Image (spheres, rainbow, N blue to C red):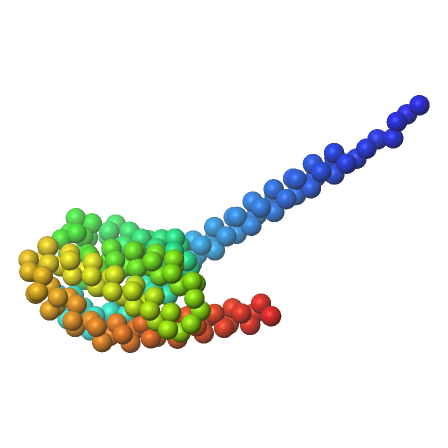
Length: 203
């Protein structure tokens, strides 16, 4: 007598294979989107470097706005990656910085601390931004990100350029406060508009 064959094992095997393929496809799609997002914000940071008020030794630029938005929109890791990509572009010789900085002169440049601050600020903003959804919280998080950039910039400026903390604060912190406040408010407005748009597409 021929026993009826059970196809349950075959079905389970097919289901497992299909699930694995879907997971791989989703992971690959997420990776591509993350890389595209990082590249986009690296390019936006470059654009921001060219919108500037030419102060000495550190110009006022629009870069901070895009750094903050990178962390908020891309998340901590991809936001930080976007700024690392931007710095990497400059270090290898692509003229993307707000000033002529090559690989050899990077850490000796007066703007290097601010650039390193871009990476940390994007990461911190990405980690904090979703903890609350209020306007006040978003402004607070973007303010923290902005201050991280300024503080790292001032410390580096004092060590390698002015050799005086008070001088570094005078030329590398105080002149930026008003402009950074405007950029923080702009970042909060843009980000909240982005959230509303994303929410409307889900409905």
